[in-house]
Length: 377
Ligand SMILES: *Cc1c(COP(=O)(O)O)cnc(C)c1O
Image 1 (cartoon, rainbow, N blue to C red):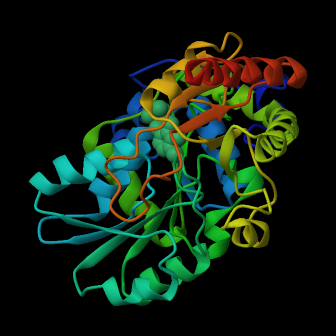
Image 2 (tube, rainbow, N blue to C red):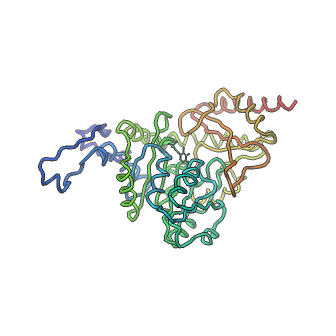
């Protein structure tokens, strides 16, 4: 609980100070020339940002962490740091959609070739490695469809081929999965989600090994990107209750996912903690628990049925993002997938289970199913 801040440095106050600022004064020219003091300029760090970085390092088991203004920036910045013209990048096909967009637009324009591989490729990943493969980008479970992979195997193949491995760890948080312990070089988070936890901020982090951190921090400083002290403070505060919140999200989510798994209007539930899910064994072997985001496939129908279901919900909000206190639902678009293609039984609905009462949430979902059944009559 004390990670990231020592109260003795703030006259006993248990939380770090919110330090705003650009200019930092030096006592003399000699100190300034050598930059021989801890803080030198607001962009390069403050006590507030240090506290959050140190807390995340402790959770991730990383050598260093950088903070950026969104989860998506925590994806794009390390890709920019480790890729250049002529390089090849391998990306799991079930990756977060905007990650794919970044690869297909800006990285492409820079002369980087991206190749997508199926999440279940296993040892076959080594056949895709080329001499110019510099980055292998992973996400587990996959965005929206939750495919699992053997992370240590993929990270090992990347390392053997001389590439840096990165994993978007947003779903699990470092409480349930620590990528660096599985050989991954960089662990990426949308702190917007569970660490923030209250749907009131955007932030991202990248946590790195000793070997990769220098290049990552250099890229952050070359681009001139950091975060505000107030937002960093809120994420630091969110970390204090993240364990309790995630346990509550997990419990409610498992109850609803199991109920949906046996529901007559549901073709399939996509949740790695359910034994019926194809990646369940891989999840169980690698992860210490599950969180509040999963999907299910409606039994039959298309976009109209999905709209009828979603529009009948009153407790679940229709909105992007997740990891906050409130339940959310949306229709998943998987049209950009090459390998990890959409289920064919019906539309895919993604749910974020918040901290509301489970019985109320179940009744809300029943109203959605009733609306779909009414359409079919
Ligand atoms: C939400 C999310 C992001 C992006 O986070 P933002 O803060 O919304 O930019 C990145 N990766 C995953 C897996 C996410 O769910």
